[in-house]
Image 1 (cartoon, rainbow, N blue to C red):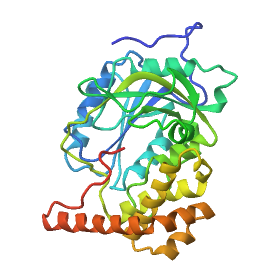
Image 2 (cartoon, one colour; image 1 turned 135 degrees about the vertical axis):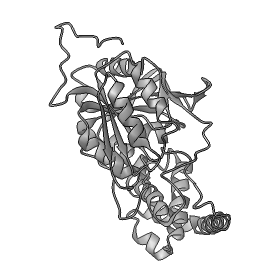
Image 3 (cartoon, rainbow, N blue to C red; image 1 turned 135 degrees about the horizontal axis):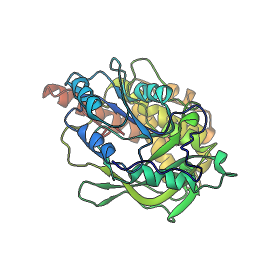
Image 4 (tube, helix red, strand yellow; image 1 turned 120 degrees about the vertical axis):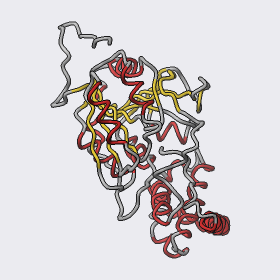
Length: 338
């Protein structure tokens, strides 16, 4: 295996009390059949200063035995934490608290990355001037599928210092991306947790972070996002609790980011429709929806959205009922575990 590259002094000093440059974090739930992609990717990384932290969210498919086998043979630290099934937000929060790496990099249990991924991410992080670094929390790069095709949009320029809010609303950058966040920053922005709610959109955290910290976006493809799996979404299904989590994201947009209306009216209006749609899905009528919104424009947009949102909520109920009749369980509306 290639060894870590030392700095000019010959040391590998990590800021703070961290033991590693990276914590590669993998939340998993019954993904024994695909978890090997992460392991094989980490085995060949050119930068070796990392740990692999797995939070198993209640798997029953022999994941623990597989990870124990890898722990016995791997030349990098693997830490395995099992918890009762609570959903990805709780698994993520647990991972952040347990992390021993300065930089926290999520690699999902059905994906992979290129051999130089950690080295290149660290290279881009080290390229941020020291006097500016406190203003940054992350480096984000591009993804390709298992056949090498680019997934999602490129950034406006090859190295671009901005934030997720501007990227999303001003430049309309869409599609899968990948990168790390500083662990110390993530501890300041935990996922909100609600009783029995196992899914909350990651966008809530990334948008909240963006109001305080910048990201270095780089047009370099480092993650391999597999699109041909038939396993479906194992953590996110169309249930009452999932609808609560999805409505929470759109409520955040309407309450905290409504000032972006003029630059991105379609995205803000879409959030109004989806907030109302998912709220109807959990039994909240118009009055209850309006009471959760703090902006006059947000209330107006939801009022306009009500007919569309109600129709969409009826369709959601029909899909749930149809899936139940077929005895296939709740129907997924979120795709994979993202």
